[in-house]
Image (cartoon, rainbow, N blue to C red):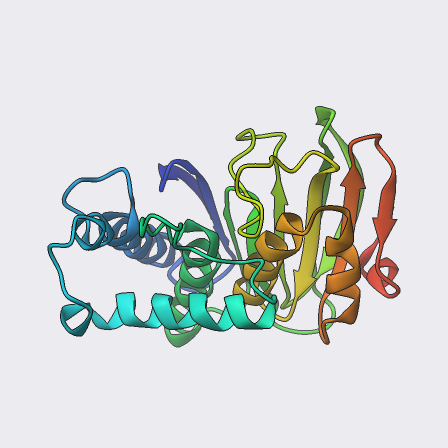
Length: 246
């Protein structure tokens, strides 16, 4: 069963094969709705909005909020400061880390319910799971200059895939070290990792590095990447090809 809903400002598709497919889809949508209510900076009554207004002290953050701040701090350290969910003015936007984290958590809900063959796609960030080596999921990488065209098809089993770029939402990712300067040298960076949380957080950090981001992914154990620059030239990491079908 495959179902799609608009949640967290994007299309979310859940595809489950076997078991209580309808119940599994509903559990994912319910969890992501909860995440949106807590972490959306567009909702005035969300916890993160209240934090940004100074209405909640750090020692009163919910357990999930504490975990996201911890994840963000870890990613900032591991990316040498190229990921920072809090701007210099103190405004915090967790979207760069919370989406992949939430998809990963949603996949755990399905696994705990006994599902072993599913696919969650939230705005192009994907977590897959297959029951055995005879099965696979296929993921397309879009041409950032012609979105209806797929330029690569990947074969994944239990990995996570995330893409950061400017071709869908415009220039929404910034370099924390030069926040006033837009990133224009690359337009798309796709990362395949052991899970969507790892892929998503490092795709965001690497994109903030611009052209050098693909080298950062190359140096990170367990990650592979594929970037496209402003001239349409693609660069991939050493072992990215193992995921490529065409």
